[in-house]
View (tube, helix red, strand yellow):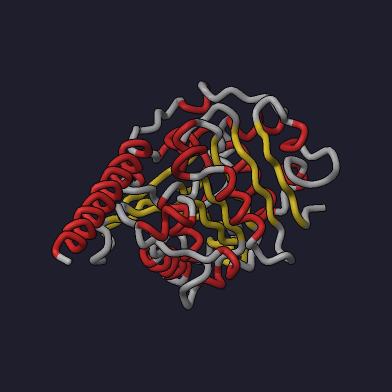
Length: 312
């Protein structure tokens, strides 16, 4: 009996050590700071992929705010500079959800890039985002600014068009943010990159359930070794895609020759296209995903394993 207990304890210790190693690996892979010139290094093939890789038409400003929250310390918001002018124009919102141990400061260039295409973009410095709680709090915060007459964002948010984007653990957090909270129904579009597989997420106690999603969903991963063999393998992507409600708009795809830590920048163009399409009704951006000749399907030099549902 003592020998059996000893074996069990050893096995539990090994599992604990493996989980610790996985967490450290996730943090390392996602923690490389993104250069402000990253878009000049991304290889593209599609015409629209090339267009949305570059900066948009808007000059971007940003501001950082103390959160006064226990889960994290700060918010940062990127927005089109013209928003500061007096006008009735409203801007869609996209909330970013961090990967393991990675605050917005590591990939602020991607926030700025998206804001240059006409979005208000907000993130926080939460290092452990899987539950979605910090994202729910962040959503309430940005919505409160829309009602605050002292804020530059007063009446500037298009609250009918609110998206969320998450990478790695942040993909888990994004799924939970749109499914598990009182304000989950505010979100109208979701994008995730290299979401931790359900099996691995369960082992890490990062539970999620894609079957509860009721909004358009674009999911991507990379074919690189770590993504394809450990964190976000093809089987996991397919399983999540097939577990979605059959009625929602959905698309899955994998970026060729890109691994876990680089998915943020190499899929950034089509993430931008996705939010332009789903939050702005941009007809040109919709051509990336919709129709028999959608660009992402034709773009076989860069993308593979594309599946599309309910996108006309």
